[in-house]
Amino acid sequence: MNSGKFVQPEPRNTFTSYQPPSSHSLVPHPPIPQQSHIGPVVPIGAVSFGPYPQNVFCPTCNQQVLTSTHKKSGVLAWLVSIGCCLFGCICGCCLIPFFSSITLDVEHSCPKCARKLGIYSKI
Ligand SMILES: [Zn+2]
Image (cartoon, rainbow, N blue to C red; front, side, top):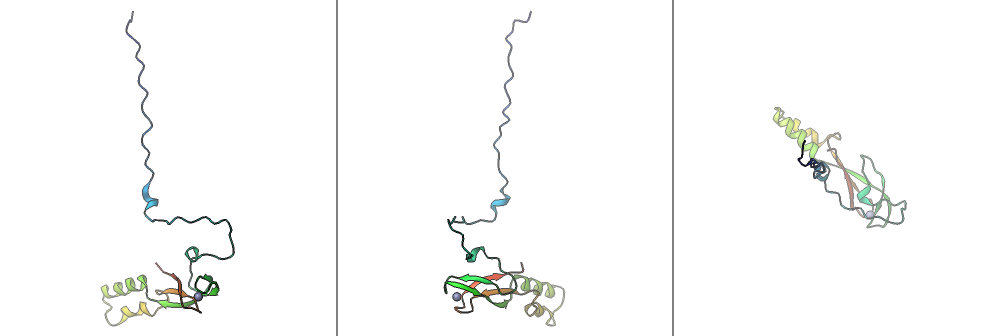
């Protein structure tokens, strides 16, 4: 007869150290302080600016204002301009992106105190 001891196989350690995907940690998000009251005033950091003037709260004037917009050459204008130069457009065509509203960013500022409130970037 088999007099040997019955050795139970050791349970496999299936609990491996789980490492969460680090793709979300590439962009640092500042912690958003939780406020007990939610009013109609939207803080500047939470506003996503578009290409047109919009109502935001100016902390300097301490009131709701309609932003005044200014076109400004941004990253996209430079990229298109450099791209034009690379493809041989050296007769001034590379300057077109700096005058075209398609490639320009839109800067939002307060019409009263001229404080820069945000920017609508094409990239
Ligand atoms: Zn202002």
